[in-house]
Length: 251
Image 1 (cartoon, rainbow, N blue to C red):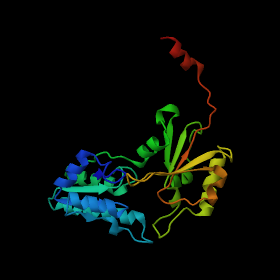
Image 2: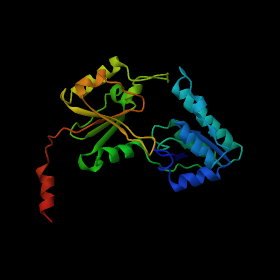
Image 3: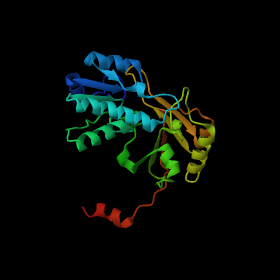
Image 4: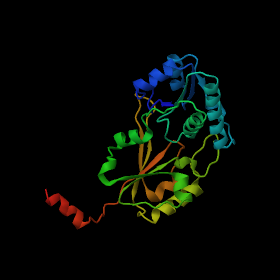
């Protein structure tokens, strides 16, 4: 399993491209036609997995079909490579499923790291996750599981535009009533004026990322697309343990 990175061509690793080129059977799932053309230039035998998606079709069923196709080619004795948008292990259920199933059946399978949307976010927003810590949740799970988190650390919410959506649909964006529920959950920790960033990494080297800064109170009235990520900056107040801080004086 390999990833294309987020931006077209330039973020794919040399190792990933080599695997794509050498594959007897190459599958791909990518959200834009330009990346599809690039993949087919590397390996003309490449075939898409995007046709597994259908409006109203449960995503779990879609992902299982992708995994089934990959496993079918593996069982046929071919050298198989599956290419996914971004990092092949980040929000890519079929890649993990296919690897687990292949290994259970005695086949060798591995995943190569790729540039993820999170990596692009850190670069585009100038965020260092090591400075105050970073918490990352899929948005529906964040609400449904009532996740605990530290508001003095960075909070990143993924797939906000797909809150509670079991499938895909044309023109999908976050539903206002569900965004209100998310806003209310965040308001328990942040003031209404707290600034959020709605972020979408650029898919092309010649274009800029989408960076929209809004107040938390404005979230329900703001269009939020499926690929939009919400970055919540940390609150400033943090109390430090004086016993730990004394360690810096011991040197």
